Image (cartoon, rainbow, N blue to C red):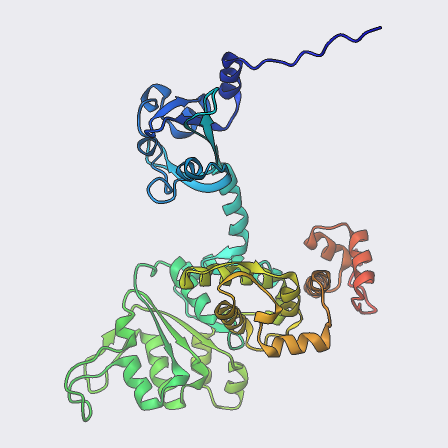
Length: 459
């Protein structure tokens, strides 16, 4: 019994038009003079421009894309004959809104193979971008990025602290980002329209520090030929950040105490008090409570600056943030150096995970900047890292893998969650968003030590 011949479906122009009208991607075509010759329904909806108004116009007039003038994807395709798939960009719709898109291009030919124009499809990524920003927002406050539960707790209270007029004390090791935190608080506060003025109190001797803080009048001392405003005056209407407050001498502490209590001061050589409305944020890497007990720091000043206290954890306690911070610094140095570094090799990242980071985030930033000098494009690899990292890595982790780094990260995250929940394993599992059985298995796999008392509630 013979089989009936197979029939190949024929796609007619009418069928093609129906398909183009039914898809959710915008599609348009242009002729060799870059005038639009077709414009489907989705293109109308995304751009807010009707087909009647689009056809016959130059495509650059319709889309007003960031790529139209200098980096037109369709122009490149028509020039070299190669399609472009999934390039990101944006267009401006009829109401002037910027719409993120993903586009693809192709050469348009007639039945004889002659090039008669080009075709482009584009997809509206607005919802994707909105979701991405919502997800990023969970890990961002100002310019600070973190996935660490320790930092997430700070993220929750920073907006409330920012709107308060109270003095803030930032405590943390060198390089943990105290000034960045101060700038973030300033940017979220009612003083954000005013200046942010920073001064490192440990970098100047007392005589210079006093004049830098309060300014001076002409004739106050030899060489003072004209008035000079101090940092309190420069920070009017804004925020004054005093770093390394623990280095200030007892004599100068008295003057600072008066400013914090009465919101006024006298410039050197002046007799008339000057008021200040600057928000004060102070920072230190020392234990001010200990300095107060041994008499190095005034107790009354300590209570004045310790109204709201923020403890910034060292990087070794938030290593889950390393991939996020590396990504942020790579993006930053790509902009600064006009480089095209794509990312970091897993083996190099595993060495970063194995390092203790005594210099904290500042040390990490320096490591990434150094890598940019040796690797202006491509991928940062182990050979681009400094010797103190690679030698340490060879001794401690050998040929470490990305899985090693992930395991270390998991162990640190679970250990921190257990400590926060007083080793209550059920509460820890809920906090980590996993089933308690999965938590128990991870604890055994990773060899996390547990106290004899498991912290479970007796209720």
